[in-house]
Amino acid sequence: MLSELYQELILDHNKKPRNRRPMANASSEADGHNPLCGDQVHVFVHVEGDRICDVSFEGHGCAISTASASMMTEAVMGRTIDEAEAIFRDFQKMVTTDGSGVEFADSLEKLEALGGVREFPMRVKCATLAWHTLHAALEGQDKVSTE
Ligand code: ZN
Image 1 (cartoon, rainbow, N blue to C red):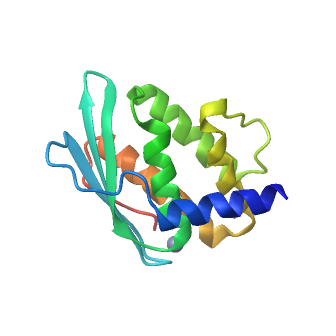
Image 2 (tube, rainbow, N blue to C red):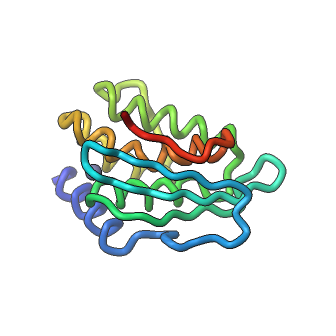
Image 3 (cartoon, rainbow, N blue to C red):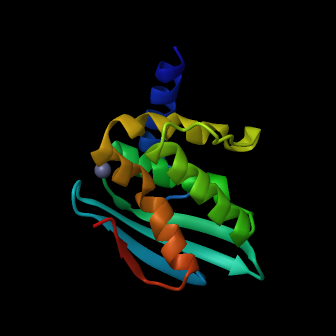
């Protein structure tokens, strides 16, 4: 039941990705590439002070990578860089371990929809690509590869 709900959420974000648009006034941006699956993502961020005022992405890839990028933008929009990095660490822990000890705040609970990828090691890279790319952009790097 729960996994059906999660699957619907992923399909919805893949079909109607949130914040998939170019950004003219990005303060940094980065390219992410997952050669194993062929996923390409470009993440734009507009940071003012230490806050992510706007975040968007473009690119193409599998349903998991697109849905994850869409959910990532929703999760970090309006947050500070430290908050965004903390969510990234939790997200990564959720998909690379059994997920115990990771507790998302109510507003971030939908990220748990992607927790199921932990069963599929190849898919973990699809799910974390947009997050690694966001991290690279925030660190001032212009590209990242999952290899
Ligand atoms: Zn993929």
